[in-house]
Image 1 (cartoon, rainbow, N blue to C red):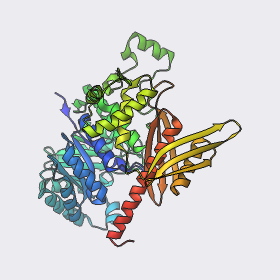
Image 2 (tube, one colour):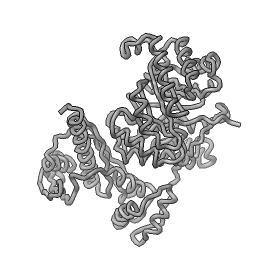
Image 3 (cartoon, one colour):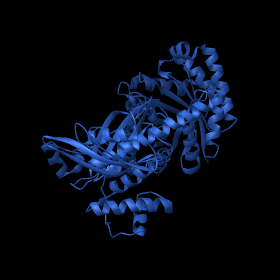
Image 4 (cartoon, rainbow, N blue to C red):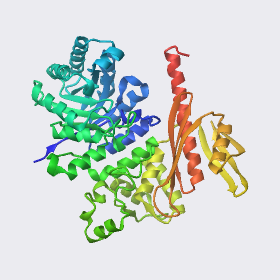
Length: 515
């Protein structure tokens, strides 16, 4: 029987450290619920001490998301661990994950600690965390650049102190698969208690080896992998959850290992995270890229038509890529609408159903056919809304060959309707410049991406933008059958997020006497 590898998903913590990929509380809860449907074993919901927003997101996920262990990260400091406990104490299955570096370069230049001091601190903080929860994980940060004998000494000490999981991070993506596998093998065979402790790995992708290193570690005996949806994360990202899960499932003959992941939820989860973070998945990305199951070569096409296994080692259906047509339209009622959402795995309150149903009806008037992706866009757009200081009331754009693009925009700003006309280099630029004038904002547009949610000329366009102002970076999303309207919605969504974050920062500053 194959070994079952625990999947520790850190999309909401390390994944959120991707530049511009921050999520608000509602977005984090939405992603966490989808991760539960994906059946990950552990959700690292955030870093409780880092901000009030992270604390609240962890607290709500612990109370509202059923199934996975809910974990908070904490530095090896008493105040961090205390704060982590406050955030997760309402979760049925709580975990505290604490960390401290073991590499000499980190200890000397970042932490200003000796090896003995770091060892003592690690043991004390694991003891402290065990005072709150039975499930404690410890990570010796920058493990792959640490002296292996000292690393083993620390690992043995924290196991003795009560850490049930020890995570070996390749923090800067430095290791190769061969040497990383050997480190895991050494820990399992040389460290007292290593054979009865869950050895986890957390690999970064700086050299493009995060997945390869993680799989090498599993082959060497690791029992848990820390990864993210779409491989997002700090710098070049983390090991990709979908690649780990499908790698083990497809090559079970080699690894003799598998996961509990419901792989049919992979595609849906990938789309949700991409939409919320604004990080578009590259077409040639393994498993979830648009080209992952596309075949152009005539030789390949000929083989597929004769027998799919000639050029497909996985079925598209195995990751949920079968497009289910919804027999629904403008005549469909709330009951049928709710049933379709239930089939897709969504459970909404009556208030949420009513809001989503209104949007569905408007979309049904514009489109002939509706697909799963259309419903997901409706739900995720509703979930990513924030307090609307600025809302779109009217939009008219004129553009064409040898014509200056002109936009007439009507917004409700803090309850007051304002109308303004402006021009730009193109229709979207004209809309954005006019919105900036009305809202009196000075945001910088860092990125703009657009894609069709489904096929056909009546498909919804999905727009993601990334804005920066006063040191805050946010992602905004909008969807509509009119791409200019979708662009305006995305821009306003981002502006509303920025306004909320800047206001929160100002209030926090006043509390601590910064302003």
